[in-house]
Amino acid sequence: MKNLLYKEINLCLNPLNYFFLGFAAMLLIPHYPVYIGFFYMCLSVFWIFNNSLINKDSLFNILLPISKNNIVKARCLLVALYEIVFILLSIPFAFLHNKFFPDGNPTGINANIAFFGLLLIVISAFNFIFITKVYKKTEKIGGPFLLGGIAFLLLYILFDVPFIIKDLFSFDLFRRLDSSNSQDLGLKLIILFVGIVIYSLSWFATYKVSCKNFKKVDL
Image 1 (cartoon, one colour):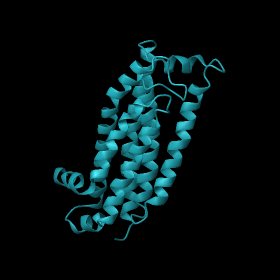
Image 2: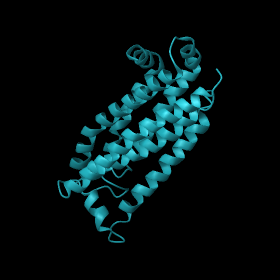
Image 3: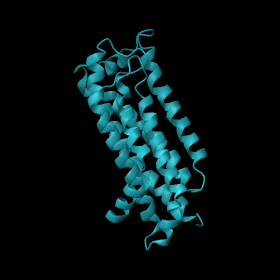
């Protein structure tokens, strides 16, 4: 698996994927939804699969003395590693976001601990829908990305709108979650913990369903 993951990193990542890591800095854009930069992370995941498709990576993998399950596992590990690196890179910009914009973000939640918990849930939905659909028909990735993007958009709206209208309707819970200081730290950490658990479990589900779908694909 170590060698297979090494192959994934060297052959399936292209310069565009490394360039897209810079979108983590979008947290510094004033009065801008903090989720949007992470949609580009999802777009970069699409490019991982697109680059693999162009280079006929699935056909190459199937010729190797490895199982289809290991092929899927290596790709899931690559995507998870890429997303974790992207999120870790964004954390310093989250601190700067709260320092530069102490009055808050009028376009949604601030880049705080609770945000990262909610973000992990959004990404989990995208990963599950996109990756499992790709492994149903490995030659078609546009449709799965569209479905995954719609899931990202719907959850983004569901999670962010309450923070936009919190003052209009006196949503005290969302005010507490939106603060960028140490106030209500315990509540924010609970949201983060829930996000981490869902993200972790979603990878298990994504891997299992993708393996099941990939086994039915005739390459």
